[in-house]
Length: 112
Image (cartoon, rainbow, N blue to C red):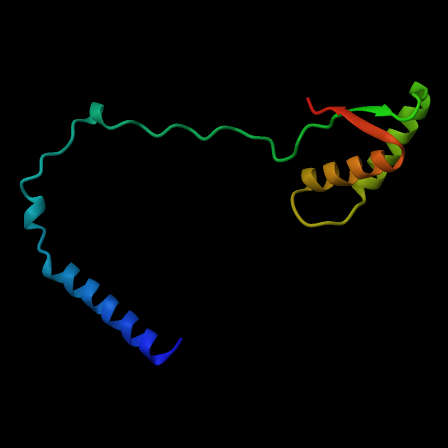
């Protein structure tokens, strides 16, 4: 930080501190408290899943048997469970699993 900037910041903080100390709160003395019913209560935050839901898969260019799909899915699940990465375990699994399924020739057809 340059010398001019330091001086400006010091003056700014000094002025704020002086203003805060000089205020005795007299202007707040005649303020009436708000009735409890007039203040809205905070709403709870919506609950969101950390990772998107696993989509439904379709093999391209032609469909595969249920047995082949289950084998591919099991292999991709194993790969996804052992994949390194940064972030939540759910998100790491989702990214590795979808990448593996795409490399096996599948396409996501629904994200519900």
